[in-house]
Image (tube, rainbow, N blue to C red; front, side, top):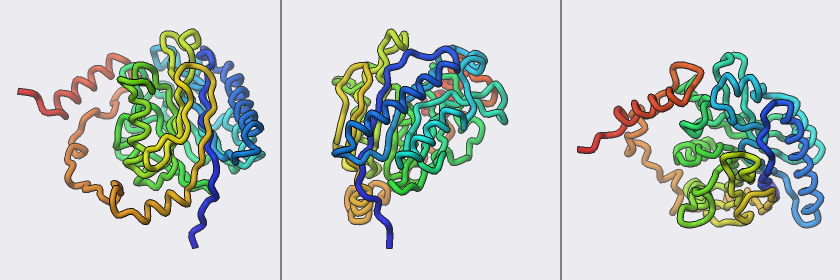
Length: 335
């Protein structure tokens, strides 16, 4: 008989830290996020069984330098690391899972010319998955995609945990329906969005992409979405400021909980009922877009568009060249 996880609560915990300039500053961010999780447990425990915490992109480090060389010298870390260990200790003590904010990750086997924008799902038993952003926000981010190193690989891991099958994608990944659909097809039931999504594409009309995309990806994949957005103010992250609005959405696209718009630390919680989700996925004949997908009807994915990077380190100039090539080869010209 299939074991159904008990209903529990997820917490999206948006942060408002100054952008670190050296890797030695990351420890303070880690301590602050663990304290935020501890305080959330203390505040909500009488009413809510919180088992999943999600933190935003750039919570540990952001690409504040313009070159891979500088980012590697000042901010990049290997994964696992002492920060992940601290999260694992917390999860083991409290029986919960943490989707970390992103690290700028150095992978020794790829050399000093490659860094990734990386988040880790940590549980009571340690690391559940490591996800490297497949779609960096180009041309601003010069981090590599795992697609650059392994074009045919499966870069969308899903962790099968006692609180459900969990996947994650980072910020700009969510503008690509294929990314989240691949996670759903890999079995994800709860999909975390670790994000630093700034205005004018926040939660306020007329360009409320943040809200529109989160709700759409949830309903089109029949999955819960726990979307944690960066809440840093401009003085902490010049020249950007992020509008927060972290949210949790159910499998029908309903917003279960959402933070107010504007920078600042916020925590929002909402229930996750995996048993109901699984029942709906099995029961529905209509509006089950995963089983209704006519894969062969869409030939655009059989045509190359943005080619993997052939030369590292990635630069803004090399990104512009690849974009121009994708436009000329992968998209029909207007006449």
